[in-house]
Length: 556
Image 1 (cartoon, rainbow, N blue to C red):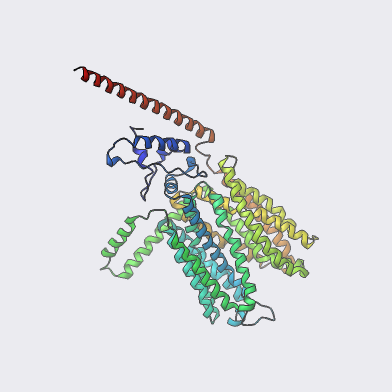
Image 2 (spheres, rainbow, N blue to C red):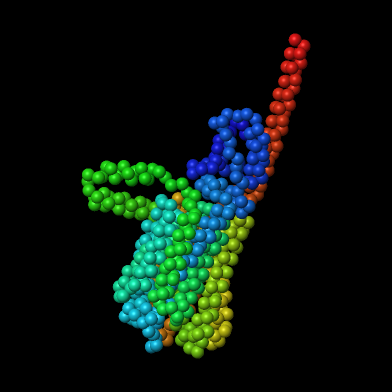
């Protein structure tokens, strides 16, 4: 220990905290850290050089196993206490709930029935039909969201992720507030474009940050974060009841203000990743060097450089076969999910015309409770299987997709009663919606830490491809719609299960097994006992030598 002081400085607090990978093996166990802390605290009582001040290790939380953690992950865990990480998770989850609530708000502010009025129906007040509504609800949001997701992923790897979330949240809150004073259809389109642009930054910035704070619980944390999809959709549906009394403009005002307040809570958190100073220095030098060439030329060069940087990072992400198969599996899952979201209500209205109201209530409860529970439980189970070495997230996603296929088939089975169909729909949600957390954890584990934001940006952009199935189903005749929806969604589930199996086949085995970890721990403890014995023997020799010297001096 005295001959190797470098590990004692590897875990010092501060933004420069780094942990070389070759030093992690000897310091990968909590008992060893405790022994080392105790030993170093005893040694620190003796006078030492002030330049060699030792900062003790901060013991990692119980749920953190450093066997498979990268150097930056361990450094982040050492700097961030458990309460601070949970606080960041809470704030980011609330922001994501606001994200989903504002995204779905418009769906509950239109009414194409014969009794609609301008006070409660946006389409009557602004004079647009159902075809124009379909464009503004899908294309106007999906196009900017898709293309911005690539830029958002690179930005999440380069800039402060908390500030990105704050600015994006303020932007989409303003887009909702502008609807209060909207007087034309094109103003709604512009608001929807800004909404899609701003909300593309949430997932890359939030999920890459959470993956760094919780490296060994990524599936569980991703599932907790994705509860915002279901909670936000449930809160968005409350606008339907609020719209009856307050009107659609008041709903936009309330939701926009509430969203802005929630997003400002991000200022109470901080990004633990140190921001490089070199980028700012280069920017200032570039500004000074290009001042004479004109602002337009400099801006053009910076955009070109950012584009090349974006292409480079995205290319590095998609070169992995494991990541490509995972993206294909996620695309198929998005197709199935959007197909259900868009066409299940018309299918149920066609199959059970007398139970439309009951279906609306049952569908809302299933999404809010069954979807949330499935997402959370899926992440917990995937993390447990991974920690015990009995499986990984890709196999879990494959099993969930394989189980969801027959459940969805029986949901729309001809001859079934309404209650039987709702029962199968409930089971289908419990099985199918557990895939997101394990899938994101697998993606984050397949790419380097500095590319997690870019990988998440590409993942978010796949939602545009997920709209292909609802678009194709729109050309199916009404009499064949139910059967086409039944076959297409079940096929997407089965094909995605096959793709997830391919993802698992390309997943490298863990470098250190549990037995190997225990063996190394035992060796470390034995070495510590031997070191303590040697130190004790040296102390006895020094004491005996000191007593002999005193005896010689007394005789002299």
